[in-house]
Each structure stands twice: as structure tokens, then as C-alpha cells.
Image 1 (tube, rainbow, N blue to C red):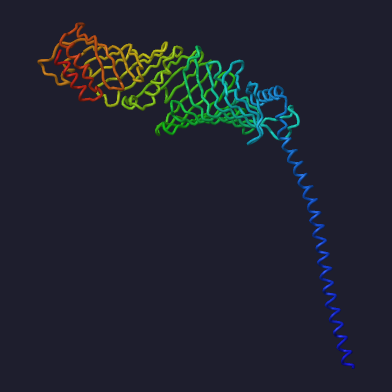
Image 2: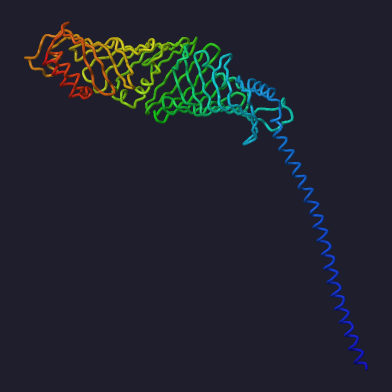
Length: 494
């Protein structure tokens, strides 16, 4: 009996324990199920509040950044023009279709923008962008300009407006940049004919501090890439300039000082590892310069333009100067010098021409006058035997080919010495005192045509026949053997 009661007690405890565990499980499930349901309901409510908050913030930010697009166009246009003039010393006129853009940064842009220097129009930009500060977009009066970018700008500069770039460098007040990208520069004369042309890949005006401003540029002149850097120190009144051109192997560095009346300085000029120094002074619209202790001197009047200079060389390499791809040939063929308002007189003297023997010191003048390029008064002496004089030799550009047309005068001092140099048989030696003839030298095709030949003032029929054959053959006179044989045949025919 006692054993049976003991068993019943243990059984009841076990059942009670199981029942409590089952009840505990269902209570746990119920509580947790109810919590998740409330959590999900609360989470949905929180998600909606976050969504609406984010939406309001996005709408507010977007509305803030788009607010400049709702400004009065005439009012914001006038405000931007005034700020640019005040901060950059740059007078611009935006077109009526000034628009607002948000990307990549907030800016206003204009397709047709006119740039002025004083009262003259100096440039027109096809794509001008004015980037603005994001600090205050609530009022057009509180818009602040950051950087300026002008793309595809055509500059038309003349003698009255060439100070435009200098003033932009020296008078700029803003701490931000001005960039001119993919632009062109045309330098015009008084009749608006082009004298000078350059492709401006990039012109960048930088502000460094209160006293120092910088200008960097990449440009092409006659298809030759050139890098130009200028620094202006307003406190010391100094300019530092550096010019580099890898194809020309050119490097120029210089410092200049200025005041209200004049500018003067020195340039260290390196070409193909040859160094020179140029001293210059700009005063009263006249640029005076000299190189290497007056071996190269000049005086350029800017208003009106007139160049007067003296060039002194020990030796001139004609082959290098007149090769097809030389800088001088490309420059002459561009016909920039054939301008009616470009006037100059350049005196050139050299001890000799390279690879041209037996010539004494050579002097001549290069004259630019009313669109023509003329070589005057070229004189030298050949082996103390004959005086050579070329007068009024004109440079001609015909179908992109370079030609020289002029007259030659040969005055014989010792004709027998001349005959001996060319080993002329004594039977062919005549008493020659003077030879005159006209010529047309085709530099690209390397031949010469001769006419109006006179010996001692007379025309010789045998020589006329010889010249007709010589002109028709068009032989390469730059070949020393051909030239020598031609001269010998000429003397034999005479």
C-alpha cells in the first residue's frame, strides 16, 4: 500500500511538470508572436516617417539647388556681369538666353558672350560658364561667383587693345580662376587685316595671394606648340616670364621691372643648347633690345607698328634656313608679313655663308613695305675678283611656293683671277668688266631662270641661245657641281 502511494505521488509530479512545460512553451510562443507583430507594426510606422523625412530633405535640397533657375533672368544677368567686372576686371555681355545648369557644379552658361576691353569688343565666346558658390541661393543679390570658363573664344586684338591680357593679369581681384579653352587669337591691323594668328589651347589666370598672380598658357604658333608662363608680383612691380617649345628646343626665362613710364628687363634665351641674353626696354610705345653685346639690336615702334633692327652674325647656314620644313619658310609662306600696315627695315650683316667659299663680309637690308618683302643693297666680293650686288630682290609666294625675283650686277676687279678660279682655258677668256641680268629663283623647285643678260652693256646672241637651253633644263643650281659647270659653260659660250 505504501509502495502504491509512493508511485502515485511520483507520477503526479511528473505529469504536473510536463503540463507546466507545455503551458510555458505556449505562453512563450504567444508572447513572442505578439511582440513580433507589434514590432512589425512599429517598424512600418518608423519606415514611413523616415521615408517622408528623406523625401522632404531631398525635395528641399533639390529645390534649394534649383532655385537659381527661377531667378529673374535680366536681374541675375546684370548681377553676374557686375560681379565679373568688379572681381576680375573683365567686362562681359551675356546673351539673352542665359541659362542655369546644376551638373557637374551649379553654374550659369551662355552660348554667345561678348568680352570688351574698355569700349572695344575684343572677343566672342561660344560657351561661357560662370560657376557659383552654394552658400546662398535664396536671393539673386547674394549669388557669389567662383570660377569662370570660356570655351571656343575668338580673340581679335589690335594695337589699341593688346593690353587686354596684361590688365587681366595685373588688375584681377578675385581669388578664383579664369580659364579660356580651345580658343583662337587674331592680331589685326588698323584695316582689320590679320597680321598674326595663334591657337590657344588653354589660357589660365591663377590667383596665388594678395601680391602674386599667375598666367599659364598652351598655344600653337605656326603649328608649333609653345608653353607660356607669367608671374606678376604687384608689390615689387616685377614680371617673371618663361617660354618653352620642345620642337624648337627653345627655352626663354626672364625677369622685368616696370613703373608707370617704362618696362625693362633681361631674357635668358636658349636654343639648341646655345645660350644668349637679351636686354630690352619698353618706353613710349617703343621696344628697344639688344642681344650679346649689340650683335643683334633693334627698335620696334608699336603705335604705329614699325621695326628697325640690326642683325650681326658670324655665319649664316642657308641650307638650314631654307630647308622645306624650316620655321622661316613656314613663316614666309603664311604671308603674315605681306601686310600693308606692317613696316620694317632690318639690316643684316654676316662674315660668311656656311659652305659658300670665297665670299667677303655680306651686308643687306630686308624691307617690309605696303605688303611687299624686298631685299635691297645686298653686296659682297667674290675672291677679291668681282663685286656682287643684288638690288630690289622681291620675295614672291606663288601657289605656296617661294620665289625670289630681282637683278644682279657683277663688277669685275680682276677678271683673270676669276677665270683662273673656274679653270677656264685661255682661248675662252674675254675682257669682261660688267655683267647684268635679271633672275627668278624658284626655291622649292631649286632652279633659276635668267633673262635680260648684258655683258659690258651689250646683248650676246650666243649667250641668249645658251640661256634658253639653260632655263629649259631647270637644273638644280644648289648642287655645287652643276652650278660650277653652268658657270664654266656660260663663260665658254661668251
